[in-house]
Length: 337
Image 1 (spheres, rainbow, N blue to C red):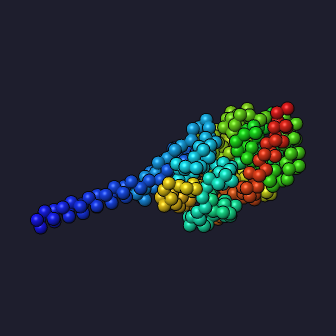
Image 2 (image 1 turned 120 degrees about the vertical axis):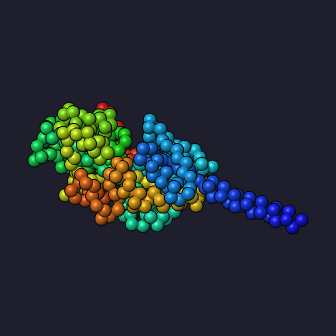
Image 3 (image 1 turned 135 degrees about the vertical axis):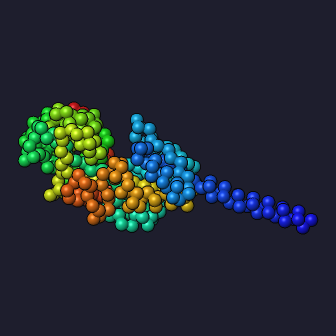
């Protein structure tokens, strides 16, 4: 009887140990992300290996961009399926914040981020950034004739048909326009865009089109994002990148964002993932891979292609979002003539 009792006790003990192992192995976190899978997946796999937590990722569909994931998170608000939202921009993150989809969490990994890139209520924090830059064809213009400011889009110094930007009703160009409304004021910004349109600057279908037209010599210069601009540089195109307004207002930086979902099914694991993503080491890794181009941290070393630290446009991201409806209303009237 004693032997039988010991045998049963051993079986129960082993079962408890195995059950504990299964419980540990079953720890998981669900993340929705608009960051390109080629950049996000290696980071998430390292998180799994280092923290012992499975990261189940849902990536956006390219055609829907971030809007598809945002719509899904809004639809799931009453019964959340995701724990973390890792976004490659900020506008939809702020929308989710307004709709109470995000939960407050003050990650220690975000403590060294400037307040410009942190939510006042701790519902999101920034991770890496892209900047709005001018891309110049070096066979068309000499350095002493390069543009240096966003305001040069409205200048007669360059023939209008040799200058381009993406349609300002969409994408990062629309967000940039709202940032100008927030910093310049509505009437000066409206006047600026009227001058750009009246001058005949070419509005094309996206930042990558601007990049390709500059690289091919169809444009002398244009306004685009750093990821598109660096793509042309990496292919050996005859181009140069000008970071605008470095002696005046600064260049507009669009941060990526990380947020905890309200009612997350796996809150402890979610916070662990948020901390991991917001760590400066993870941001540096994303920059090195090309997933973003700038650190959001004050005093961070500039990327190798930039000689000096970038001066960002001083604007509250909430102000940018607030100006978006008015900016789009004006831009539709100006550019849809």
